[in-house]
Length: 137
Image: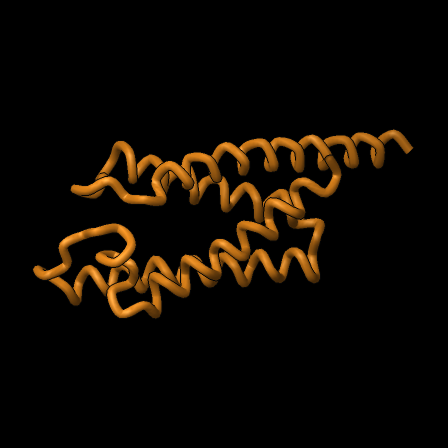
């Protein structure tokens, strides 16, 4: 159980790098090829928004890499940030400003959110246990 938060954060780092690269650097940002969105109108606006999303995902992946390599004491914070980010993304896909088509990754994102909630809860429990053990000495 101890390694679960670190492993989940590592997978999220890889997912962020992959998704970020697609959104930032693919010719259509994945909007049409992956999601099936019609980008014939306002193409530049859509591509710019997808690139912004992709670059943000790459930055999140870099932060997660930094945490995993240099600052494992920040795993709880990194997981919490990713969990909130993913929760807002899932809420947007399903409720807030959803796409006019079913996005292929919507179900995958909901699953990732569930895994992140569990991993964040484990990391929080570990953090609280360490603090309690540190205070009792």
